[in-house]
Length: 132
Image (cartoon, rainbow, N blue to C red; front, top):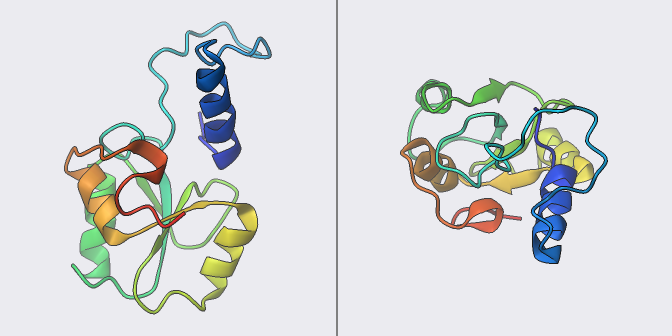
């Protein structure tokens, strides 16, 4: 399952309504109780991150390795599969940032990625280090 921002919004709305996220329009018969929105659970399983800017806390390759070790995927460009944009210093005025904002992707900081990769939760989608 590729988790999109719309999926997160739909899931949050369903949870707020108290129906546990079952909106009746599932096309498959699989149980969903193990599914979590991108970034809500510790780790980066199912998260596809594109990086823009210059990582301050580590070299870019080390960030790629950290993301992969935590179960995430790195995309070198913003694509339909991308779920998050890591906005590092200097990335504010880039094409990647503009594309991510245009697609409504979740924009996160290096700290958000490091926290998730190291098993921290911190409040899900809008947790510490989430820019939007």
